[in-house]
Image 1 (cartoon, rainbow, N blue to C red):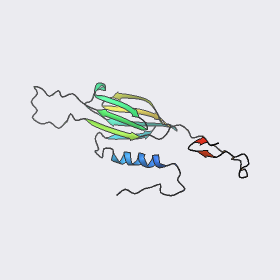
Image 2 (cartoon, helix red, strand yellow):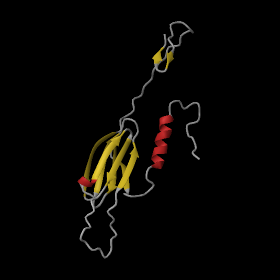
Image 3 (cartoon, one colour):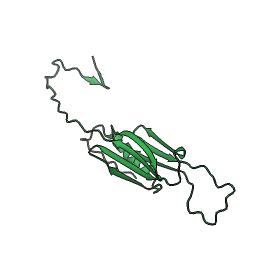
Image 4 (cartoon, rainbow, N blue to C red):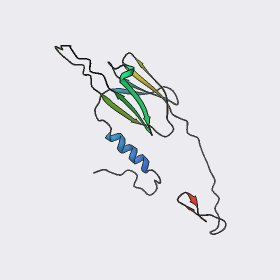
Length: 150
């Protein structure tokens, strides 16, 4: 049973947030690969994933709507090799991060087994808008389904 977070009638148009939260909780509960998220400045964020053994060709980074998806898939190179112990698994992974509106991916690089992804969070603009109140039927055009009726 899921608990709805935005059931209050005061939260208008927040259905998409609830969907994003559901998507984030459904994403892999597996802790592989481990990652850090750090703030690099007033508007900068960096995600760092430990992807030892993966090359740039083994990794794929995509932004799908408001999700940043990192996939890793290594080619099986164990042909003809005899392992006495195999503790380093060549396993694939998918890790997804839900991005807030307006967050931009600035770049990514691989360094010493760590994949770094830089993000920029835009500064919110303070907006104040005065809305004129009119008498009923005094020039006010009703809006239906995002279009003015009339």
